[in-house]
Image 1 (spheres, rainbow, N blue to C red):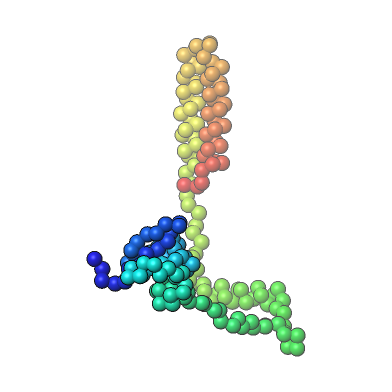
Image 2 (image 1 turned 90 degrees about the vertical axis):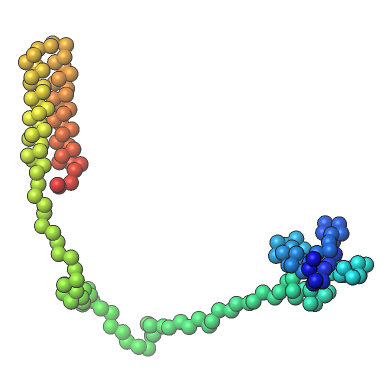
Length: 171
């Protein structure tokens, strides 16, 4: 049993308690009780008053929130009407960019030479394999199978060329 003061509360029209100060703090944080909620000390159960009227209890349960203020905002004007400013020309901007690029030349990545390309050799090998299968099956001679072989020949060559030269990157 705690030795601190305990209080009765009215919550939703019902008398609850006695509650310790720690329980009252939790109820205040959760918004169950407000400064207008009535309370009575355990020693005087008939002395009901709003929490805001008891300055010590009100300060304990509902401490003043710190107020934050922003510092004064200082604005610096760069283009003042009385001060003549020189607007850079395009040539001056390009020269300045070129000077910066030359100053950082050692830090920049060098462009890589293009990689060797084996796509043409791979295309020829795969096309020879596809077309060899078609020719062998045409020589065997199954008349009902020939239209499918010609379709496979055309689609195989077109799709192989598209994949190797249109879709894939250099490798």
